[in-house]
Length: 615
Image 1 (cartoon, rainbow, N blue to C red):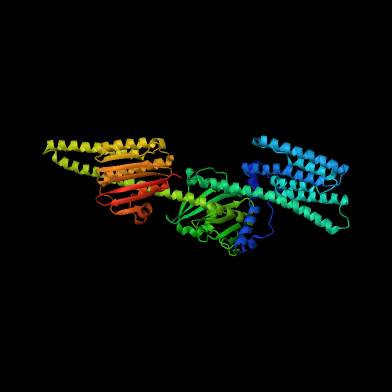
Image 2 (cartoon, rainbow, N blue to C red; image 1 turned 180 degrees about the vertical axis):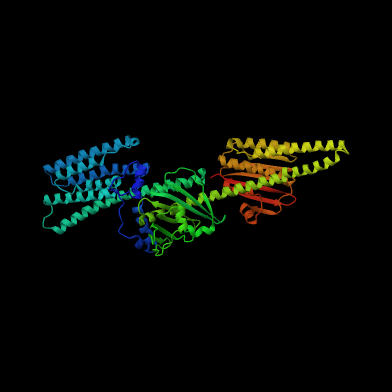
């Protein structure tokens, strides 16, 4: 026996709440078709699109803080509307029924005020008066009130509160039933004549419209909050500290669950590296994602040559079954692009949903959802397009950080290779040449050979010490603000002992207050700058000054050596354009948002200044 599978938004609800969603919590269908909506011009299209996507987005549970905010609205609205109903009841002519209904409303008002205080005391336990109690009170008041005018106020309250708690789909029939009961009681009590059909219908529609409008308002607030919370959760997956692979794993996993797809993919086109990177995440997996690298020649194989198309294929067999539109103007695409046969077989694609995402105003890649457990609909594609629009900046920041880290790693490797080449490799080559000469001279001049061997032994010791220091410098370094001054002074002491360069270290304050990552990078810049001076600048004196004020941390390294090959004062960006300056130091200063300035006077030294804002 075939059973119909739950819709993507229902699967999402069940996944997040731990249980099945209410059967009648399906999303309301907006009568405006997607194609018509996307052909509307300008701001009207944008406004309608926001309304459309807001109503068709997957149903999500509001964040706990937002839920508490909505419950406070209900708690405050209850006594206010009861008070309005009481004032309306007191306007009625004196009678036994009017006195009884007023007494009931007074008691109801007292209970509402007590409930307000109780819910305030029990807010940590999230206790709230069940809405069924208000429904029972409304039912009793309907049949006891001599007039239906006071009944409108608790009726409006019920509709608004039910819209928040139960959603629009459940509240709409409830509002219809209650409005029919109200109009029926009005007719029975003789306030309208049975023959006045037009008035009866108008009163019915007005009552229903008022209740439905308040229900929609409550449900709309709930949905808007849920949408914001969903986008916040999606953006939270893009954490720079956890790295690109883990961020994309969490994001793609969330996408697969939300749309009830078997697999989620993200393709990124890196123009600098001239490569395409593919991350694949199967639903339910938790392994670390390793991207597949492909040449740009495979662009057309993943629809990267038509980045403006939002596409859905529910079937790729034969002519297939699908739909899509151009994201620039919303016009429907008649000839839908489709994945080539080899790619379909490689990914085992039966159905797909795909949209593009941007970086810096340019199309950068695509998000794919493969093999949905039920056919995708137009609202699913619109919702995915909205998600891609919101996640674009977070993805851009994550990829930018990855790019900066890659450049920093490349620069660090280049520096290490350069140091090894200029240092120990040159020394080893010199030792090899001297040993060859000594091998020939030992029989003839053993005393000179012995002296030369002693010099070589000392050279090897010096190089071993330098290599040991290089290895020490490569180890991960943890620097806190409280330790920065001591580390700088300790390194300065070793520097004076191991080199012929005179070093003056000037620190304005011993109470530095800066983030640990800033302190770490500043120390690395300080250490690398001094090592570069020792190896390349041929300086006899260097002055280092570290200072801090309320807004910035400043490091200045000034030497009297040969300076750089260029003359003048340049910023880090200007040095990048000219392909000049210390690469690793430029990358480290950029990592912490610092401003690098290099002043060079060939033959007379150089000054390096790094200003790190402490915002």
